Length: 156
Ligand code: ADP
Image 1 (cartoon, protein in one colour):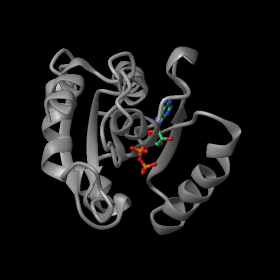
Image 2 (cartoon, protein in one colour):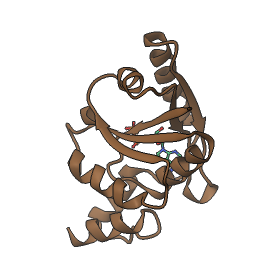
Image 3 (spheres, helix red, strand yellow):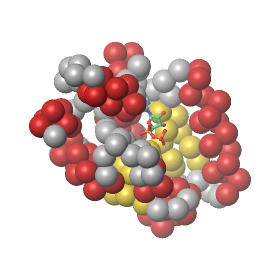
């Protein structure tokens, strides 16, 4: 059974993340989307809020699980029996950081491989930080985030 972890901050989850997750769920037997707890420090939403919103956004994906984790991603992956980490690439600017991260992870545990996926072009520019910025300035985020995220953030 091929299990992949899709780790990240997901503060909040966006349609870009969801698109990557759906592609991953079509490739692997199981995908665990996992919020990194160490990303809470300067967070917008709490880890619990992020996990709750992801759960509400993935109800139609039956081979996807939602979780959060502390510590090194490779240790968490091993614990879950996963062999693969999924990361998304938006632009060349993401590549340098992501390449470094994947090489660091592979130096820590050579059994864990990183797979890079891209989104549909219409979701490519979306980032959690852009969403937060639009929201804080009173803009409409409905096109960029899953419905449960839109409802939660606009009523917040
Ligand atoms: P992190 O803080 O770990 O970068 P993010 O929640 O910002 O966490 O992103 C998690 C992963 O999803 C990263 O690999 C990031 O490049 C990818 N990602 C985020 N938004 C998009 C998008 N619109 N298209 C493709 N990949 C994306």
